[in-house]
Amino acid sequence: MKLHLKAKVPNEGARRLARWLGEQRCADAAFESVARQIGSHVSIVDRLISGEIEPGAMVAHAVWVATEGAVHRRDWRRAPEGGWFDAPAPHTAERLAA
Image 1 (cartoon, rainbow, N blue to C red):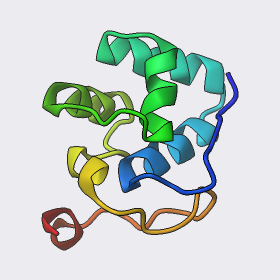
Image 2 (image 1 turned 45 degrees about the vertical axis):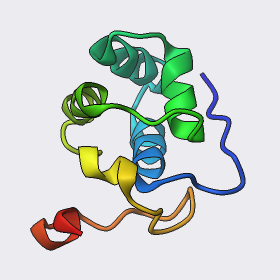
Image 3 (image 1 turned 90 degrees about the vertical axis):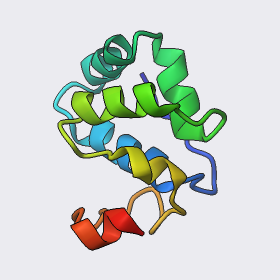
């Protein structure tokens, strides 16, 4: 599965999810794993990354579980902290509260 990244990063959740998927040993299996965890299809994962849709609380939690905490539910509501290929800063309590 190829990531179809828009020029502008839609939100921090999309950026972190794209980064996490790219870092996985087998990106196709990771896409499918996230899709299964959220109870949907890989096309929905792609739409989350593109910013076309924003996850509700249950889906955001499922993404958090699937990514082993790499993408927090609040990340979806935050402005991106960098470009697609910039390494995300570690999550801290202060950053998550913002």
